Length: 68
Ligand SMILES: [Cu+2]
Image 1 (cartoon, rainbow, N blue to C red):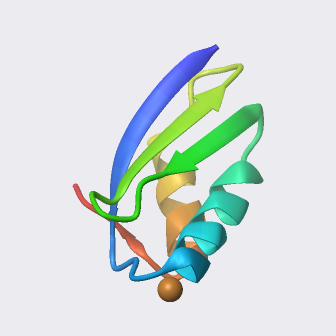
Image 2 (image 1 turned 45 degrees about the horizontal axis):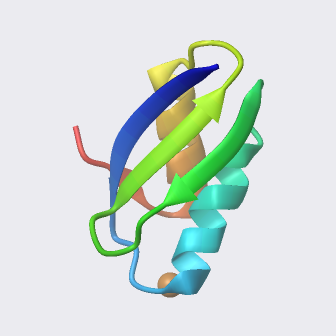
């Protein structure tokens, strides 16, 4: 299992958290997604290393942005 941590900006409530969790959770091999609303920290566990562009696209799809 690989753990990837990214920071997402723009989330303001539980719905935002759910949106990010759902979209990122759709990525290949992802097992779990943990989102901390206060810090914007998103911790992703997956069976294979994730492509950062794919994570960015998923976060974008949810309506938020990755902090570079
Ligand atoms: Cu929200």
